[in-house]
Length: 621
Ligand code: SF4
Image (cartoon, rainbow, N blue to C red; front, side, top):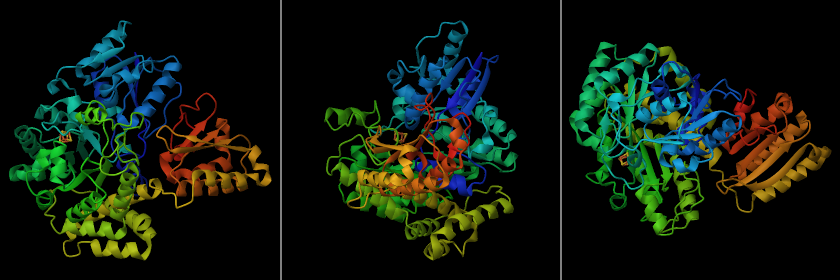
């Protein structure tokens, strides 16, 4: 049996750190590999021929040699996952959907996939494989009980192209004891944290070490959901690092009560953890109580962050705006807290109701749920909740202002300084070579700092820890992250200046196309994208010479810079991708990321949804 497992393209978001991946982290294409697929591959029968393709780092095969195609996806990938399922199913393949979104909403895949494996895979996937092998698969395999993680195999890391990712991933535990009302993790994995044994962790790290991996992200829901277990594993990891030259660098996700336990923080450092992602959400304790996030109300949040810094643990944090008590004044409260805390990777999102969560049920009962609004990515300029104490427009504008304010050169520098002031010693680890380190700094200076002119260079220089050079690495990392987030905001938070509408920009475009009868080679249409944004379609129906490509590129750049439009470039035939005019056009649109969709040819027009950048290589998709 030939099994092809696919990880669909993840739409660009803050989490993509696209600028950092492309400009600074030499040779990488994405941050993290699809660990779930590597686990599913390990759960498949030994005599099956399994291949993993990640659309985020390589092209998809249009007509693969496969008997079964499994496609996973988180909420942000659901749209693309469904497109791919439809495409391959139409091509005669047996398709199966899985991943976190299909687990949460398997009913949405009826008629799209031949089968759905919902929930944790350890018991359900082998059942599915056995049924496929005997020719009688069912349409739904649902895991309803608790999976014992002792039954989770070492993922098939060997099937992943690990050299394409910034960090490898492993999972130690599933589940979280808390009950935040917006969280879908506890809906999927429950509130009783379950852990793998240290022997399993050792086997997984050994496998990664053999593949040359040095950076590992423990993708747990909450690494310290059971503190006793976490401490046991951390002690093991510290000893493991000593045995193997302290070469591995770790990061994870944890709840804020990590900062309440000195022993735990010391163990994190000894084990080689450099950072932890923490859901802080908001400094407003009343809002936190309303959302059932009471674990963040137990002390001074700012002091907790600084205790973590003092222990050499960097903090990446999640924040949310749009809670029921939030008003237009809340954005400033958030901005002040984030600035004081020095958190550079501050992932602010709009409160969004995820299906099956208590929040979803509540806002639906209150009639405040916007049913057809996409909810996969809470950092897009929309939400599926009607806010209580402000309008949706005020919420979105406040959100944009908050981010724009956080990402000026001055604000990044202020946060770097506010962090380093409290930062202790990093974990003792063997670092990258001097050559690697200098290469990274050079690329940051050349492609990031220098491009911002004198002002950025000044703020960069004054944020560096000149008297504590050991913290230079931290400052450099923060600037890389800060500039990557700034680049995302610049490209995605385009706001139409007063009086500039999409219709006006399209009229200007039409006018420009009148010259030289270009209208016979390029057709325009204005419509609506799934999320409600305007969508402009540009259809190339004739030859695109250099002059026309330049004119078109100029006008489309204006359109994208001045309005939040989605753009579809439809190209009639594959061979046109080779034309210099089309290549010039696509290159010029590259920086707008997934606001630009390229569709090629009749048969695959609906399928193709990719960044213009990828279209330059007309390999399958
Ligand atoms: S602490 Fe995090 S993982 Fe746990 S319930 Fe809250 S949001 Fe979910």
